Image 1 (cartoon, rainbow, N blue to C red):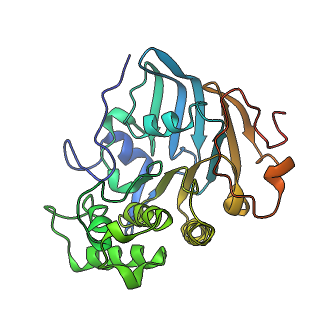
Image 2 (cartoon, helix red, strand yellow):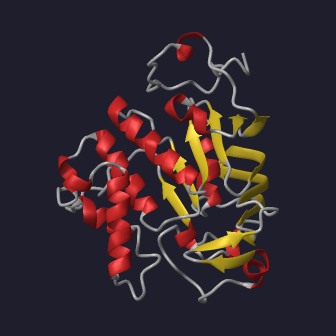
Length: 289
């Protein structure tokens, strides 16, 4: 049965406060919630989904433990982006279950705990806005009555500094390069100080300088204990951070374990993966060829 789609990260709906499932698995410590390490931060069980008449997910099982960094790999059309969009309620399941922090997705309301960076897009979608304004929108899920406090504004400034744009906070996002747009989207996700960070192809088509900034930003988040799920074509600059790789092919999990090693041209120093793989093309990782 299809579960109703909840509000996306950055919005709040439904009754205030955690439900009984959340209270059983969590206790509040400081600004973060101490999560039971035995309960996955994110869990998909038997997840099936279709886009139109085309099946995209065919029984995906995926669990991400607290503090874990997981890479979701696969060719174009393998179901990677659909899986993470389903995880935050943007794509409904036809079968299966999803839970966040031990709470079924349909009852989850604490969206400030989840940061989501969508597949590459422009930071303001054509609306005139400064970097600070865009990043501030990511803090609204924590703000009371939609008004940012001094602490909220400080969190926004920290997020902008983390991605190396502190000196450009007042600049219009229209003046930014593609890599800088991506940094703004990541800062927007970090502004809420999430416990789970989901990033869909954060390195795709991004210049080398921005890739290095993004990798450093991720290192900081991982060191702080943030749980991370990354959708990637290849591991690249973030490879040292990855605890586990899950490979999808035709909507099915074909590998769940240590990150695969790159082979051929993909193993060359400085290889910048911006070209797509066809769905039928084998992954150039040495795992599936």
